[in-house]
Length: 184
Ligand code: ADP
Image (cartoon, rainbow, N blue to C red; front, side):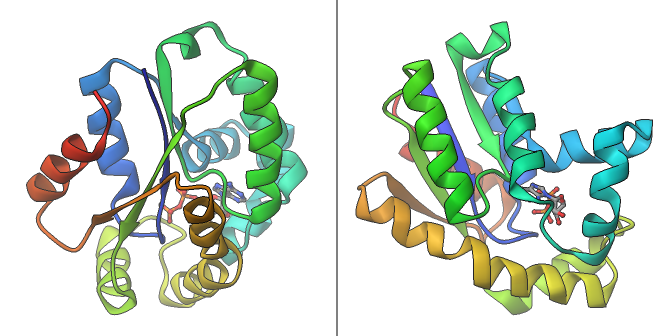
């Protein structure tokens, strides 16, 4: 049973790798970025609240994202396992998730840190062409990553849940490394 959290900076390739692995393992891929972008497209109340933050490269407030994840983890398809991509992104989100998983009885969670140096990230993100991928917004997202999300590396490695995967190599090689670290 795989329950995986993908950590890593924006542009590390979390999304691509998480989708491929989820398909292979037949488990849902839960991306908070995707859910938020969908909400934005539908102009739902959540989307309207989130838009300004996303456009600026800031984090959407914890309470909004947490409610979203809580709802998603109560759906029927999560019994077989799951991959969380883009959540948690702050220590308080991680603490929230801990409690939620305890309530759900979900243990043995593995956290994968996809590692890529900043200069490579900026290059990749500029090439991606998503509407929130302008240079200023990218720099802001990286700052936010270093300030708010990077502390999660310590948080999870203290609990011996963290595994490193080198994201600075060709997609196929990252894919192979990931398969090797994910417990069968
Ligand atoms: P990337 O591919 O750059 O890592 P995502 O697709 O995961 O970005 O997220 C896009 C945007 O959605 C983020 O810049 C942020 O504004 C918002 N977002 C996604 N996940 C979270 C989260 N867990 N907490 C707060 N904001 C989030």
